[in-house]
Image 1 (cartoon, rainbow, N blue to C red):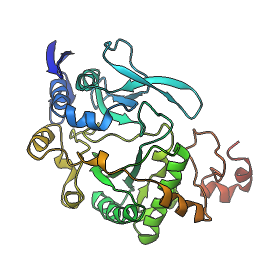
Image 2 (cartoon, one colour):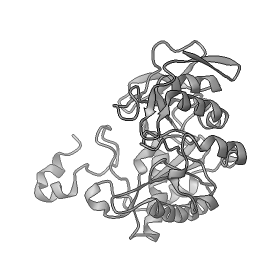
Image 3 (spheres, one colour):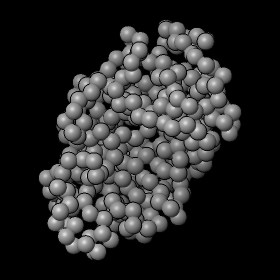
Length: 337
């Protein structure tokens, strides 16, 4: 056991020499020290947000799981926030308020921090709009960057400021601060409207088709990441990938020039120390959804399908895979029951 001083507290580090990433030989000590070194920047992302912990107790070669409730045995300085799931059930989940809790979570085997887009004081009204650009087979990071450039234009037309980051893999995430005046349904509708505009300008490269069989070799703008209880790995999160990559916040100018594999547990702390946080001014760029929701209301196509585990939503189209609907017309009538 070792002691890691952080934020005026001493956090216990257990099994420090345990290998978490076998490829580069990265130990648990290195992961915990990484989170100590980026704690202030990461806390700026997570502070007062209900946060799911993606834990890898056996390293990246083991089976991870999401902790949506605060793990037992947490020290008394680890705080919680109450959230409501789509089912109506409620839970008290991890809610970061100081740097030490991030190091504690890392010692518990956490690699990814997955915050809700809300603050603890108002857990039903997001203050963050998120768009996940997910390259499909046959596409890569460069394709996601190209789509993100058009997304930036659409966000500007909607009166929103986008802040890009690498996903830690091949994708790109773009976050926008918004006023907490709309519920999850409205935010998701705004994302759909924005994403559709991007697809209209890049029909050969971007899609909002929920069914994989319809996406082709395009970048999927995953609008359902805006649904209640769906979360995206935060900036500064270590991803459970062989190279120990990190979801790195970037400027728009840098996004087009980087290789996402260059941002790792071993490289990112020095980059942060040398250049600072590219998203430090994010809280000062708050916008609204009025324009995006006007786009949505004027679009006769209406809503898009929710994930299968969600309750049927008003105005939602049938959740039937297109090829199945063609084979079995009766499935359309019975879906969503």
